[in-house]
Image 1 (cartoon, helix red, strand yellow):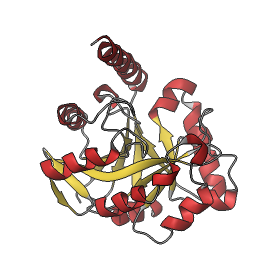
Image 2 (image 1 turned 45 degrees about the horizontal axis):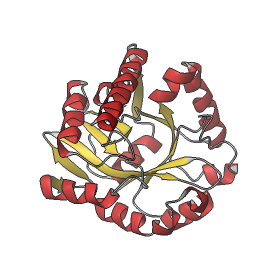
Image 3 (image 1 turned 180 degrees about the horizontal axis):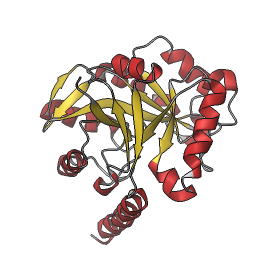
Length: 254
């Protein structure tokens, strides 16, 4: 049986304020592969600078099959991270045309005071071939726990997030699992990488290879995967954060 290691929460840019760089993105891809990943979900922020330019560059540069770009042998599933009203982030993973259409429909909701309500976002995407993940649900700055349980149950999983494990300690994984269990949801892992060094901090080990978001969703909902939290997580995340700040400072100086 062919397995697949995937990171379900990653970014292709250093920050929301930077332009998309194909060279930087490729450095992310190569580091992901070096960390035994077969696939990642590219869940860039929906209100990042020039979101559609990023998609245009990916479309022009790489073959697309199923719901992913094939980049130097790595499957890069298309997706997006969406801010919702009253705090919280939702990851959406699906076919690139669906992600484009969903992003177009959010054009009036990119500013903080106009973020879409969680209920409306769930209604808009209900029944679509998407994997819908509640990102870092216990993070102090952007929690999801204040939203109604009946809304949260409509998600496919909650995100055990490497940045949160570094910030709050390993007990955060237990807190997310407890929340997910109370709502009848599984948990998945995301590195939340904006910088290559963070890859490998957490990994989802799927029991089968997947070509589409629907296949990913089916495996996750069936529990046919396991989570791997690296013993080097603290070092990886700390190094990535330090490098990210150095790179941002160099851009300001330049």
